[in-house]
Length: 271
Ligand code: IPD
Image (cartoon, rainbow, N blue to C red; front, top):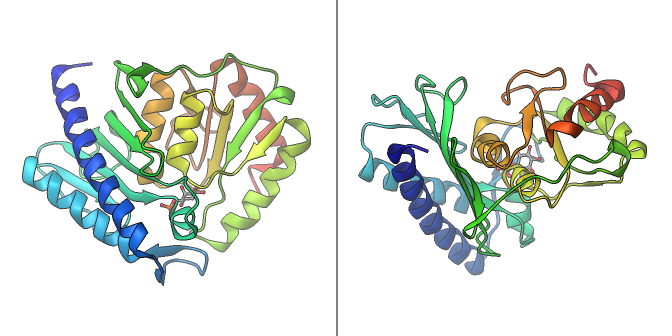
């Protein structure tokens, strides 16, 4: 990893930790749904918005020329060629119910031209504020949890694979598609739906699940986690290969990827 990406990681970590403290404090004071977004299941709380506001101000204070793409507010176009891709609370439903599996996710992307897609993620941090676990990676510099290097599990046959997934909230048809893909279940060890895509990708990196797939993610859900999983040795892409910004993201040990991708195609990725 270059010195520049190490410095960006340091800043991303500092900001993520401060945002995590802020959101955790706000959680203790109580949380309710502020609004629904694209569908009745797609919720946001005031804490999501306030945490993103805090993250944005900390980024701009340190790096006024960078862009910011976040879940809860309009894209801020920068001039430096670097964009920060931010999910202030990934796993808002868990946050609402006080299930300790939500995260602050921050990635730094180079060359995406004021967006989040098509560039190279050079640094990423995912923090679980409740457990205090902090996952991080730089491009080419490996992935770590609490100073320990992360590595994906060795490939297992699909029938022995514990597979994480998520069910997007952002459109009614996403729920139907997610239900179709659960046709995979009889072919694998089991499914986990933990409720935060960023933490799911970190779970692949840490070998807590063997693989993960989800349809319809946004860049703020996956950018940091995808770098962490890739740096831990995962292969990421779509059900027919390609890049991580595929409409259906698949992450798995290289030796498991093809078998999982084939099973997802057979379950019905074209539905
Ligand atoms: C959601 C979570 C969830 C995933 C959804 C995402 P949010 O993010 O990551 O696990 O299944 O697709 O939208 O809305 O809680 O930030």
